[in-house]
Image (cartoon, rainbow, N blue to C red; front, top):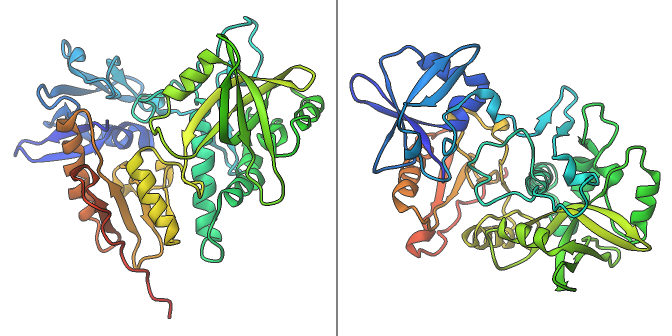
Length: 407
């Protein structure tokens, strides 16, 4: 669920902003602009009981819920369980430095052996990770999601017009570029590529562990093949490193509690998936998963978050359309107000924003979001066109906008 801050002025005119834009972008510049004005502020997460909000200021500007109204926020809203939120709360554990390298912050139990044996990692993510405030740490699922989306976008931008991507191509892009520029510490002594299983026999993991300067697990990202329960405590899970050259199928041991938690975090039940996390060696050619994330993709390597997205991106890829996922708001134009579209056609006369409107358990709040996106994205011409699919109505996918003519 995406909730907004609604700003109402003295003339009862309304403006809506995403919280990520209002609080998280430009160190809360919008809050500073709106502070000490005669405007009234509301959270839109609960259509039946709009929650009054206020802007506070100490060292920084922050947004807070009016006293006595905290419990009116709906589950899934970023203010659910939070009385106030400041710009620093939007640190996500994914930070780009001046060299363009990415420093990620993971819970140490995600990639290092826990001193308490038998405690499963809780770093798999959860079903509200897209709306809840991150506590400065990435889940392993979110890390893989960012890596795959960035690999897709970069390949589409640079090479998509020459050769359309396949799953092996996206994995190669991720290893050669994204993983090589992503580090687990600020000193940049450990890149993901240096500790990543990149195909070959399972025994190659031993050699990666043996060469490590700083002892961590080995990072893996694999196309899911199967899993089999061994006993009440553990299962075997098998994945494949996509490659056009050789069969790279490996199996790991995983605790059933860790596997079940990772399965619950993935909301798309059918179709191809990837598994990701860290493994350590427990015996001769026995590798045990320390942390596990599962996320859905289509056969071309596009991360999908719903069955409707899968259907859409299957069609997009079948027609070899050039579409970016535009996942990171840092690179969005300010005119988008922090909204995250489902994609962006870059092969049309002007870039075309993509939205899929699917089903929602909370239809009232969902349609507030839908109406806002329809109105706002439609207003961005002539800089952007807007294409959308009302999947929740049972409509078929509309015709895609035409590809621009190359003269």
